[in-house]
Image (cartoon, rainbow over all chains, first blue to last red; front, side, top):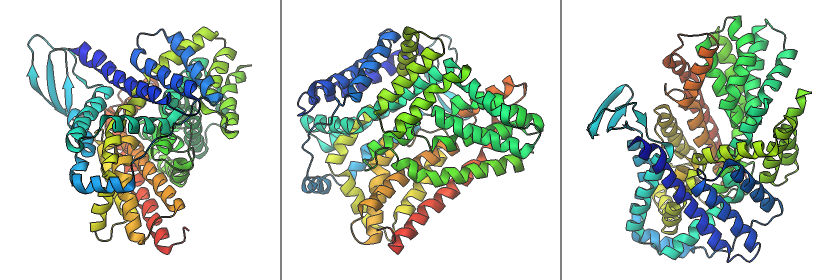
Length: 335
Length: 225
């Protein structure tokens, strides 16, 4: 049971992701330009999605290098697609009516329901905050109660939405396949950027980049001045998060290297300083292309003209104001 | 010379600034950083490959594409525009204010409602665009549309980020607690940290309101041509 929900079912949804990618690979053979490269690119991504757990890591790493070579030599291109016309969509919209929202909304509702479900090796539970009761059990003794895997939640919600969409719209398979490949090719290579940057962060971690940075900062900061300490801690979180693309990766390093000696050890309240230190890092996340899943992929998904900076531009004023607020709050609430 | 491990950051900054191919820049940065800090090429590829696979959850949105493909072809955006058209005084800013509250509340309760692919593209963006168009009374300029897209994506991020630590068992709070316990604060509890996170959540919603309603005012003045 635990193994099925925690290990095999997530893999099933990754296999479905792989199928979406393979479909784009097949569609790419009809490309006018860069047929082989584009097809190979989506094919490799499909393989990594499907068999990621089985392939030796070093081979996956090698496949990533091949994908990098393909995009660097401009061998991955968008195909030509026949899009639906505005008139056809208008006509469909009048026929289907507001039922069209059911699939979209069901993604959210399913996610809401599934976030209350937990399981152990012998039972399912309904759980909200500290309140848990068993829905049904299979006998035997259960062990640790855990929440559903993120892939299972999103995957289940999407499958339900897909079934509803098919029932409501009765689409033609060829249309849907072509539209799906178009969406994926539009997002293009940036769809694997989040995962790749996560992997880069891991290399940085093993190489000890964080320690070097916090050493540099702490060697130039005078100890004992609370205001300077708070400013350096907040900016350290912001800058290191921008470099790593991930506030979690920055938090431990910067809090141990700077936050503790320069702020908490000077009399700061650790709970307040810690909580604000983390969200100070999120201000950095708002400003960095390294956080590709939050800032770059949305550009592709929402089809902005500026494919890299449109979201960051919108977030910049908020991020800068929030940095100042973090410094003030840390001084006011933390001491 | 331990500063040499920072060369990967330099590669990223230079590569992004020169608009070189992003995938290649990231891969080169990883390999170079690994090599200069004493790993061999096999070890670097192993770390890259293993971490890439364990991060697949970040790309789970691929399986939402077929749903979006269908509902967009069957008139989702057109219907959103029609419904928004019936609401009096609708505006992009108001739509985004509502989403900001819903998204932050969901995030604070650890409910997975939200996402650029799941929510913003199929629901929030078409509603905001339709509302803005209605408030303006004519087609949006390309620049205005670009700005709405940026704002819609930003509101999703604000709600997600700044409210998530209000939930005591969120991974951020758990990491904060783990770090503080490691530093010697043995009786630090999750709820002590999450209650300190409420201020930032409220301030971020307030600032989101200011930003998106400011956009409404700018649109009204027509100073965004």
